[in-house]
Length: 226
Length: 226
Figure (cartoon, each protein chain N blue to C red):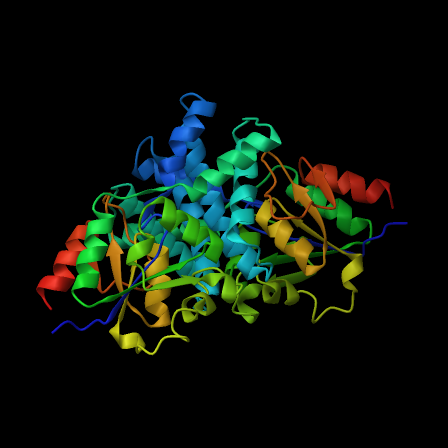
């Protein structure tokens, strides 16, 4: 019998590839797309953390635009406002990782409730999941905007627990971002770290409950033990 | 007449150069010192932010060691425990930037109260200032350890306000870290950003009260207007 009733996925970097934006960025700045994409993502995360610490929550889309503005300046790249906004909106059109839809379907068919908990606003989460063709498999969509705090603030993780009848001990939180898995684990979830590219897990006094190399491995693990 | 009674300095990266550790790191790992030093500093900052968000404060020295452990793993560099600890302790022996002592003396001679507010523990701050030959010029030494929250949490900045009789409007907070100047500004301080190396100021809805290219320029500005 499987110990979990519900699997809760992070979105950005876990189900969809944030570096999908590099292709569009590379069309604008030949040969510098990945450099821009990496700095942009780094700053996007830093701003979610820093703004939450300062009690200055802003919607994820605004933070994403701010991070892009910084990154363009830092790299001495220039764009018209309309082009910058259009590039920012690429975050609504991220590509899912291989095998994502099929693996989610396998888990759902095995009786697991499938949810997402993301830093994105509810509007963004729906846009991203719709574009990626994943929306149909989700039973629950949770945005931190209800808490007005970004992950890993405990209030952000709490948004997924309050309205649900499932006890936290039967929920598995899944993220490719090891700081996010750490935050979720310290909050009280069992966690799964998806480590696709042989990264190093963050050193903040926590180890994930399980580690897999992709979502297909997670699906196999959860459904063959059931 | 000068509008400020007190100047409050950040320590790491503002008065002393965190990349002083690169030299020692380069002796251990030829040609890779600056790479290690940069990742280590980045992770050190990230962990202060993330641990504060998770309500899991740990002393700055522990966070510094954690960040070093991560960075060595990530870069596939290995050290014995005793060597790693010794390298971590290099953070107690950071070099002051040029003209720091003289500039602080000029400000103090002009009647300004000179303080430091740092993420470091009180013990570390004293060790760093003593090694750098700066301790004698400080009227106040403030560590965030009293708040058990790292900057830019408002509680960290509040540690410098409570015990002082000076009103916040007559205090100038000075940092080379633009996220720190942003946090201090959102908290309510007037701020000065020391931008030594033509960096880009963070895009979090705040601009510093003034920007200088070094501490000597700040000293000149504050004392010639007085």
